[in-house]
Amino acid sequence: MRILGLDIGDKTIGVAVSDLLGFTAQGVTTIKRIGKEKDIQELKKICEEYKVETIVAGLPKNMNGTLGPQSEKVLKFCEVIEERIGLPIKMWDERLTTVAAHRAMLEADLSRAKRKKIVDKMAAMYILQGYLDSISSK
Image 1 (spheres, helix red, strand yellow):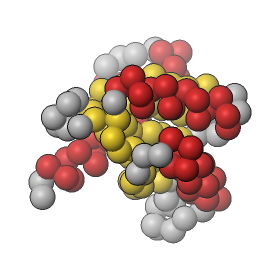
Image 2 (tube, one colour):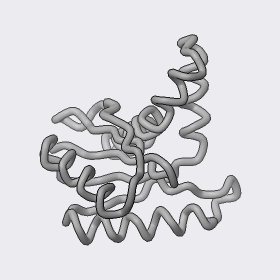
Image 3 (tube, helix red, strand yellow):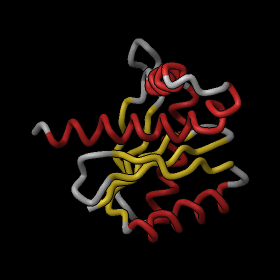
């Protein structure tokens, strides 16, 4: 059973996928957003390629736990994904995942240009890994 992790932004979507046993998350790609139709087609292709059964999308909450305008955009897009791709979507609190991704890349001494290219994919990995850890501890 594979699970897809998404870090959905206005310009890009970071994508990660779990291993077959659901223990670890690996970064797959960063989708440059062109339009809703193209974005959905790209996600559908990835879901079919990896035989995904569930999608976990990061929900960008404010630090006080409330939902802001970006959260609303993500929730609306996730409704479209669920409707068009036909897979269940679980929302995961993504607070500080991008910060953690940046910190890990700084520690790895990656250049700013390299960090910019992979930060969304790394954030998707953190979102998915957090979810995987939560279900394995139950």
